[in-house]
Amino acid sequence: MTKKVALLVGGWNAEREVSINKGKNVAAALREGGYDLKVVEVTKDIPKLIKDLTPKPDVLFNNIYGRIGEDGILQGFLEMLEIPYTCSSVMASAITMDKVMTKRMAESVGVPVAKGGLATKEEVLAESIVPRPYVVKPYNEGSSVDIYIIKEGDNHLATIGQNWNYGEKALVEEYIPGLELTVAVLDGKAQAVTNIISHTGGFFDYEAKYEDEKTELELPAKIPQNVYDAALDYAQAVYNVIGCN
Image 1 (cartoon, rainbow, N blue to C red):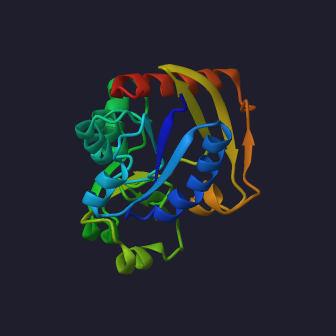
Image 2: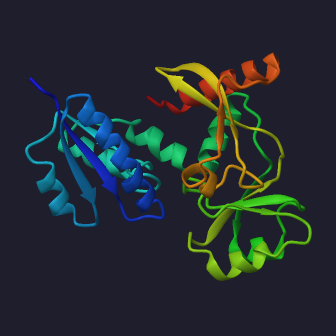
């Protein structure tokens, strides 16, 4: 019997369009794989969502990015409906979407983290947390949404002062230049290290992730073996201490 899959796209956060656009590729792959697919666009209309998920699918593919989709809220909703879903559990999702909590968990297993912490908008504008250069970012968003690297001579603080839409606090951390390394972890075991080479200037920002076709993925990463091994160890330790799956 063909497995019935519900693919969730949309949501109502800053990453809605990413979810919808990437969902088209997921839908094509699932149909190619022979699944009985139903694409469901998620809005704040919860009764409609429940109706769209009735009768229950065999499994739900969660393609909602950022808050609502990755922070445990949707996971808890699906637990109540008793629908199996892709992505980690309620608790692990809630922790990993909160950068401050994730840093604390990482430190608890010996993973070094950047200095800094939560700051009010007033503290950010007063530059009272760490000296330049430093990074300002939402503490509970994904996809590098509205991340600013504050360096000498720039005017990003004016933009933050006028356009900050992520609550009363932001995460402020020291700027640490280096490579953009990412590690895949499967069933608690780190698999490989990828070096992401961005050409948008500065870092692996929203444009480099979703719009710039020149972004390079070097797999396996051509880095010193001790750095490669450390990246594997750190990723695996964080995955397991938070309880991802």
